Image 1 (cartoon, rainbow, N blue to C red):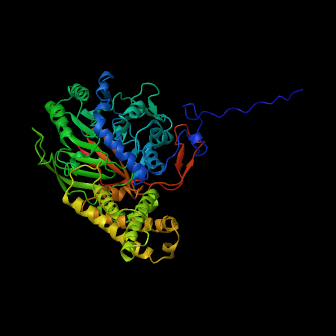
Image 2: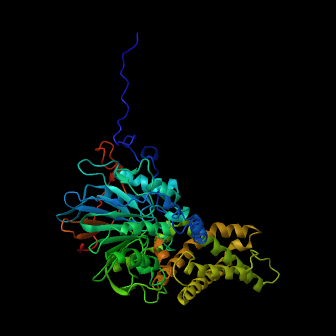
Length: 578
């Protein structure tokens, strides 16, 4: 006789996407692997990123899929007001480490967000990702782990009671490193066109959307700022036929070229051409431009237009204390023919503050070796080789018949050190021209490394390792001297970065080397029934670093919730445009 035993019921599908809610942070349950922050100064990453940048610039025209997108549907999207208004979220530079990326994704996914006493902002009906949805380079796995996975975990499925929110995206330079292959597969697919509770509608790497109250959203794809392709221009020219003198356009671009034009006068040319030839003939206005790429919040303004950078979606923080107080757009020294009239803009807001940004810069001394152990190891190795070359020369001076500790040509090592230091002062991937300050600071850094190696050689020759039989001195140098040299030379490099940053040199490396995860930001915008657009810059002073799963929450509730407070506030007072 057999017992009549009822088998246990299978786990309930609480997501609506064929997967039960995860009960732990195990990647097998989440469906993606939460990744640590990218160590931006890791030697292999520096090499691979440099090669990818070089390949993209040299062969980008051959890999440019935008010309092929002309065969894809050219839909102009439309979104109506919900309860008399429409809310739009904007986030950029988001696909980095899980703690920072998910902190922002979680806040974006909540039904509403408290940003001040008595002020709660509802979740956006649209979510616009403004570029660099993945780091350090695009691939299907990287998108899954650093973008799609975290955002699906934040909003697994649409919340009841409101229409499903829509997600749009434009590519940044990191999305372009594979020629947009992975980007288009994720954001422009026809089947399973959703990322968690957000649905995706675009079919190209750029889009136009009609919004309530005669507002429009145009988002362009510049492909490394090179040019705007004909299929893209034709798409927007067709969309612009629906604009009129009363239309107002929110223009989303991949880079804040209005700021980059200070160092590179041609940076703004493509955006200016687009506004001048596509939008201006219709009589429509562009009251606001938004961009990511620079990982902070900054707003330049005049009486006619707001120029907003908001790249605080998850990537390492970049400095705000060296932002120019005033800019001219287009720049006065542009060589573009028929450029738009030059207008002056004043820096109206920034986050974090200049004072806090300066304080952050001094953290490079402890964060550089901690965040980038591979970089410190590389510095220690090079410093050890240079020290041994110098020690060999010193020994040969004192006793020409004595065998050198290590047979390395000193002149070659010195020239290599100086060349590497000058190259580091202005990496090939950096925009703008090389000026005398780059040469002087780079050479000064190189001389500092040589002096450090010389002092190290004098100390090393006083130690008993020198008298050991060959090759034990070299082994001892690698085991004993190398780690110490790595720590000391990383501090010398940190000091150089602080000094150079004061002259606006290596400012990106000063902050990239620290990998600061706090001070994140995004925009929440509201088109009201009266036709006004209000922009709320949202700041997150400290991200959450402890997370836990919520396996029994509602189907649309976040899979992962903070294990510590995650408050948000306004970076500055709201900006209202009419």
